[in-house]
Length: 165
Image (cartoon, rainbow, N blue to C red; front, side, top):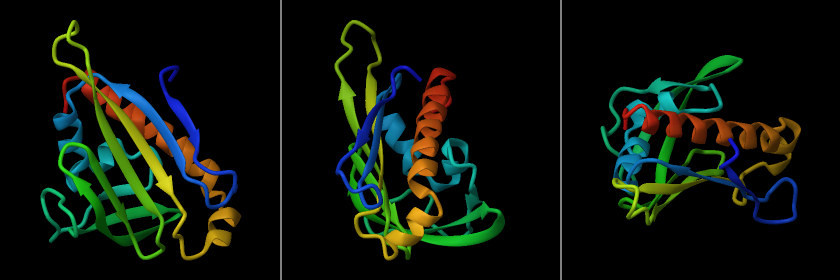
């Protein structure tokens, strides 16, 4: 995890963006395909709450796409997400009814000596438009999400290393 970097975007403990980055040993297109495929989100989820994609959603995400996920945090539940930011190969973000956003920013890394190239992947948890910042604070989402982002980045790096992207 020594190559994970990042921090917060603002001083406010509750509504600041959590943003962490890591270099992934795979081209941006391959990493983006993983992120844009809801059926693979359980493989990368560092929170341990994603159980799988709900039937009926798109195989691949696009701006405005809605996709459901089976989740578990204590008890099982279902959530419907909507893709709210999308730039093929560079940016994808989604949110659900509570308003906070999960965002992924991909930047190719020039590794002309290394061959296939790699990607600087930044994951963000953006609570700036959350419906209930107090709820996020009381439930410890800041600490929980920072830990989950680190784990997610580790999982994506491991999939890239195994050639499973």
